Image: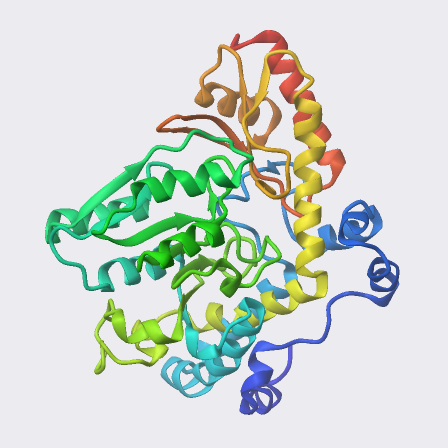
Length: 427
């Protein structure tokens, strides 16, 4: 660990607070750089290096990375280092030293997001970012908002609160999933638009089942009608190879502790430059209706250590490459789902097409409740998943990460074969 003088010298340049040398050893990088992302997805030597950068349990097989992702060692170390220095004199090191790295971090995140740094606010998670927009937009009684019953509960509840408090009208879609047809989604949303529709809320990847929606096509139709677009990117930023402006949305938020593998409780919010003044700050600010994206960062005391360590997570992401990461995640999903489809009584409820799905997939076994399957996977095989029963979606969500190997997923497949053969019997 560097001494205090070395630390302060590094912090004097704000960019040093959020950047580290490339992580990837040359022995791995040179061969992989010559491969397409799809070819690199099957280079097990490269992914063995990635696995070694994580401190995950060798015994409990964590296949619920759709909830929250672990951090690589470099991110954990950065977080701990910043945390220890902050504790030497909190009000000094937090506000006068660590906080000075935020603008460099903002630039780094904007580069990953493909937008201006003046359109990025750093916060704690997707829920906070989306709530800021949901409660910050000027909506009047009778204004309509289109959303789906398959959206994330925190967002649904936020909109219901606005409906109850402000008299807006929520127009609900009930999607039949999975789908492999852009027109299905576009038609569902467009059919719900009326002259009173002011906002459409679109979940980029539906967390229950891993369905990717064609946000850009829906957004284009919405904008033709003067409708603003909110995109929930909690499960796509850091996983899919895209830039936020590609979606054509006006507002976007994500949790960086998901696929970017940043410290827990870190997130970002995107607001298109010309929309910032239209959104009231959720927390107190001297210019709550001003045009500066920083008005959304009046959070008071927060974890400066975890915030600054986001930069290390961004560097780790760059060392792997977004296209390779997405290809690997999809390869692992296909590895187990293609084989699981061949097991009698096992059903896969997620598309195999990389246009419509990536890491997350939903599985069920005939005659078993999701809670029963989830319970047996954990109690008998020490495989951590999550049972889903939400609206018309029922099954067990399985989410491998890029630190997993095909051998890890063979363990899941063996468990599914055994459980499917015995049903929900206890022995």
